[in-house]
Length: 365
Ligand code: SAM
Ligand code: DTB
Ligand code: SF4
Image (cartoon, rainbow, N blue to C red; front, side, top):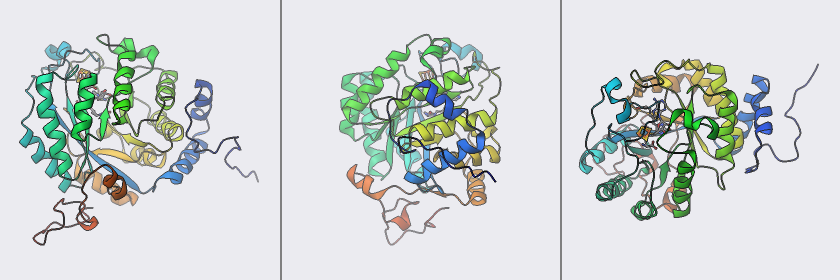
């Protein structure tokens, strides 16, 4: 009988490395599927509880009318005649905080606020800062995605207490200009380094299904893994083909090929959260289960992403029940370090700080 074990390598399989070559990454990507999954699951278990998945919640705080021309996006003004999406103004701070409270009651620990901007205007920053402060005061991790940032912007966001900034590189450097012409891959990396230098944690990933090759997908992960520090969160989106955008007719992604990218992200960035992001409404339960086995340990919860649909609480709850997965609680030590007040753990889902009047069923799931 042939007994298969993990191949012996000079470095431990979960080494945090920043010197990946495409050839090495490709060799891992191309392993027989079972070997790839076993390796990714092994790496995951060295750093995370494999049966816990982080719940992040998204809110579009400013929808549509964006000056950028990202070929996949419903919110670009360049595609508005095709999508019919109307631009809206920046949401009121109180409304954002109300939505965040609801998300917290449903078990979300991270609140991500997104604006359809090329970059924020200085007149908008006061509201954005108030949103970060308000959501943080609820005891949630905060994330913002506002487009490109200046040195002033990152300082304001850091001072407000922002935990994460989401800024995706989306695809490989080679393929980038096929999808977006109004900014460059280098612009994206510039903002990421500003965010990092300001001491804000980085959330950066990309999209599978834009029409890119497998090599482009691998190169995207090589770029992320070879940043000076790995992004703490790596969202992997499957393209949601939006009618009226240039990519509306892109070929569907093969689910097994998608799982391979999740596994590779897990292996190359062993300590990062890998988020199974957009596109879950089109994924079978089996595909999602394979993604969790391959190392994905974060999802967006709720019925909407920014403009597109997401499975919603009931479907996710049912899937989690079948798989024996539980929502990940906020790491209280890390939260304390970040200045986030956490509720006693039995009230993690309701966010009431454990007051005697609390009626909320505690571990919501
Ligand atoms: N304007 C900001 C920016 O571009 O960074 C923030 C919002 S933007 C919608 C955030 C990310 O969502 C994009 O970088 C892209 O990776 C992802 N995204 C947008 N539309 C998508 C779609 N139709 N399918 C999958 N992912 C998408
Ligand atoms: C990320 O990587 N995916 C999220 C979040 N970061 C901002 C956005 C997904 C958007 C999906 C399309 C929509 O809702 O319009
Ligand atoms: Fe604008 Fe972001 Fe959409 Fe690009 S992805 S069009 S920057 S909202």
